[in-house]
Every structure is written in C-alpha cells, then in structure tokens.
Length: 373
Ligand code: FNR
Image 1: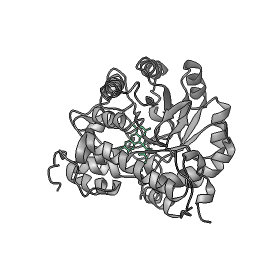
Image 2: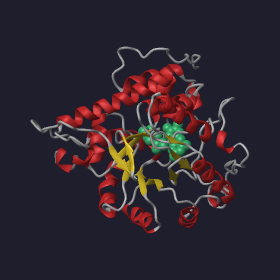
Image 3: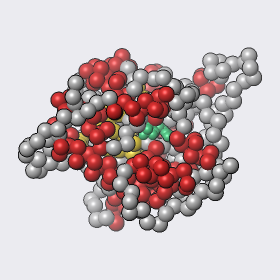
C-alpha cells in the first residue's frame, strides 16, 4: 500500500516558503503508519480541523507609519529570555521522523535560539539532548543555550516520577511542563524497531489493553488508577523548586485552581486534537483563562499554530507564547536539522512581518485592538 519512505533531503528545496511546504512533502519521507500516527486526531477529527480553522475566524487590522526601530520578538517567560514567543512543543519519539531524532531537533532549535521542550517520551535520553544543546551553543560561540524545558508525564509510581524530576534538574533543565490531558489516552500505534522511550528504560509502563466487550473500559483499569490528580500536583510542587507549567488546561476554573496549587504557568492546549474530539478550541478558551489569571501567570498556547499571523492572534487574545508540534516532525522528516532550523526561521520571519504590519515593535505591544470585531 505504502511506497518505501524516502531518506531526508540533504538540502532544503529552494521553493520551500511555508510550513505547509514541509507538511505536504513529509508523507513521502515517512512510513504510512508513522505519518498517520503523527497527523491523526481523536475520533472524527473535528478538533483537528478546528485547530486550524480557529485562527481563520480572526482578521488583523493593519496599522501604518508606526516607528518600529528597536523592535524585537524577544519575550521573558518565568524570568528567562526567549528570542521569540515560539517554542517547540513536547513531541514524543523524534526518531520516528529522522535517525538523529531529538539530537537533530535540539541542534536546530539551539541554532535558532529557540527552546525545545523535551518530552518524557523522547527517543534519546534527556541528558544527551541537554548536552547537545550546550555543545551546540558553545560551538556557536554563545554564552549559554536557550532555556532547557522538560515535559513530565507522571509515571505509575511516584518514585519513578521523582527520578525523572531529579534527572531533569541534574541535567540543567530549568522548568517542568507537566502534561495533564493525555493520561488516559487510547493509542493503537506500535513503535517500529529502533525507536524507544529512552528515558524510561528501567521503568515499568502500564500496557493498557481494552478488556473484552462488557469488561472495564477506563474506570477500574490500572491506567485510570495511575492518572494524576491535584494531590499529585501538590506532591510534585513540594518536591521541586523548578517552575511548573501545566499543559492541557482549557477552562478558566482549572486555571484559577492551578494558581491556588502554586503552578507557575499553563499551556492552553487540546493536545493537537489528539485526545478527545469536540473540545473547546484553545483560542476560544484563552480570553476567559487570561482574565481569570490576570498578571499572575503566563499562558502559552498550542494546537494548530502554522504561521506567523496565528502567533500574533494568540498573543492578541492573551497568550505570551505559542508552541508548535507536528511541524517539527514534518521538517525533520523532509530535511533533518536544516529543515527544522528553516521551519523555525520561517515562523520567526512571518511573525516579524505580521508585527510590523500591525505596528507592534514587541510581543508586549500586541493586544486585542489588532483584531477586527
Ligand atoms: C504530541 N504531543 C505531546 N505532548 C506532550 O506533552 N508529550 C508528548 O510526548 C507528546 N507527543 C506528541 C506526539 C505527536 C506525534 C504529536 C502530534 C503530538 C502534543 C504536542 O505537545 C502539542 O500539544 C500538539 O502537537 C500541538 O498541536 P500541533 O502544533 O501539532 O497542531
């Protein structure tokens, strides 16, 4: 059914101008089942489609003749400087897309002074990926690499969760992003040979298999029993001084609750439409969540971000930064390290153009008045 995947290109095709070019080319470089795993969403994929359409509901109002000298895309998040309000979302198993996996992605991210959020389910160890960032920064003559962030999935056993936290701290990660929306996700995808969860080698995982018809589904299963709760968040908060960001909240009520539990930030996300179909669009959830937390914590947003104007719209509605998920794997599969670097460059260039056209010299200066209606 599927043609053999092509190896990554050794040069970026000169006609590539947009993330959509990588997305269009990626299936030729991936095994069919891997492409479908990366692209797919939950259920009939209405959320997946809505993630793209949500940005199209807003139009930008241009503002002319503003003085943009000294302008910059830089933002400060949790006291750390980021060159742009653009981060690479935690995405599992980059080796699915390229033999060099997260090593290639981190090299590209470092070259573009961008934070890559390293997944618990990375296919190289979190230590190797952090070392890659430092080595790449040193080679570029930079004093430091961009801020290192680790995405934490709670493990069935707190001792193993804590082991991941301590390893991340020891490796120099400066923030933990705790993903809370995928604990009870169904998946039928089987990893191909040579791709593994490198951080979890010695840790037991829950192999969730649906019981026969008439048996337990989620309630009553080990998977559900191991899913974290606010008590686990309190426990984690008591175990580490690193900033904690919860990824996967979509309600103002949960945002307020996160504040009460000592959380430092939130990623407003529906996990790229992969967990439950028909969830509220992140862009729609954002304003009420921003009102709920005010200046007390930054909100980040992901799910469907594909161009600079998407980023600007998210900033206008209350996000301090965005993350991109699938485009990393598209670029990695098509052209490896240079592909990911190019993908990030395109987003940054599009964002600068959109800021200039709306008369905003900094992300801080972006507000609702750039949106029509
Ligand atoms: C993900 N995502 C994800 N999130 C997370 O916290 N840990 C993970 O390991 C993964 N793994 C993962 C694998 C794949 C193949 C995809 C597509 C996504 C979700 C990811 O961080 C992000 O929320 C979405 O990808 C954002 O949507 P877009 O940008 O892909 O539309």
